[in-house]
Image (tube, rainbow, N blue to C red; front, side, top):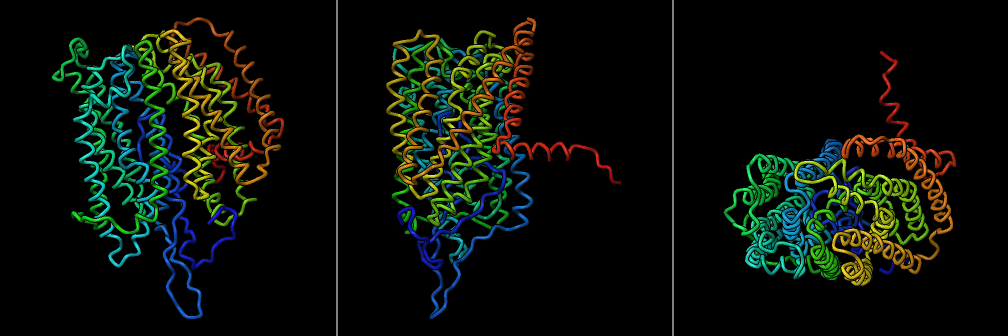
Length: 604
């Protein structure tokens, strides 16, 4: 149905059923993403929208469509655990990234590992990831209305998925040198031999990524959420232990020549792959406890053809975004060693505020927005979009502004030490600072793409990604021409943020064409007030930095980070509160509740 058409009758087979997502659980928490450029807004399709099954026939009476109701005890028990698990997973995942820099620095060894560790996730996304999220998960839920409770369909889906994963993994390992050559610029400073060696050890992760995603889909369809939330934490624990063992081992990884028998190379490669295998294996016991038993069942279910067009657009989205990542990595490897590592970790820090604030916002607003879109209620969709955009502006612009001031301090405070020097850590912080202006555009692009998906439009997000990539690639290739080898990583981070600015503008125009008036005047007013408050916060943070004495590289960085961060954010949000910006109210109320909860009770 075209967007804006009257809602369908409840018993129409093309009407829409909505499955509520557990509160506080990020949409992408089920699939751990190594690729820093992997954008998966289409994850929301897996749980937000689902075509109804035809209603039972009956003369002269309307039969209510079947409802997919989560088990209340499971939801109530799991929601809090999953929110905690998501936080713990982020913290432990960030910790092992820091430990990796401590262990091997930001030189060619880390670059080789980072490129090789990106490959499994990229291949998995092309093989199964996007299609699994957007197509298979809804069909698993629908199959539960089958006479056998969906057992046959699930077995067929697992048979097909495991076969594709197994064949794809074997071919990828065999073609490791060809795959890594896509990411390495000829004549650059990357070490192709070490990258190939890591790739052979890490590419088996493809199979385990896929198994984890498939079993997560089955468990979530059965309303079992906690194992899929906590399994990535155990993966991170395994990797942390691996890195601790790696740092205790004497010597360094052999580079000239590269030897597959090198103990340190084997420990790092096998240990990281083992983490993904443990993550997947932890889902088997809870699946068996549901009574499900796997057996090979061949054939393609007829229902999969319903979403064929959607799957093709999702696959196109994934392929185009990975093409952009490939060019980005090739440009980085043409610069000084360490560029890939600095970019990857700077991008991880860049995404952190969005992961904490933006994802939570989208998780809360997407069910309502999806329902309004399915009903064709343009006015309410625009209201939801405008509200989410304004809250994103108020929360993220002050953070982005302060990040430009404390970026270098963040890099030195977190990543200097061990094998990594203060200079290289500061370079990482500079990359973060120079790209921070793209934080709000990035959040807006993620929001806009989810609005299109809520309108059952999988084509437009792919076309937007095409335009973003067409803009991004020439700018990336200009970096080695205009910048010295050391500054190429700064240029790529700058280009990355500029690309999101283009994407946000394009998405806004496209939504204006689709929806009409977007309440832009109100949003513009909020942006101007927030920029004014953020400018005052930046000025205060700079002044605060002047009073910090030189205590030595890392100690000075920590003091500046804490002092300038508190002062800058305090002034920014204080000015917004004084201006009585309405969009700040939810955060202010939440903070008041936390303070009230922390006060000792007077009863008792």
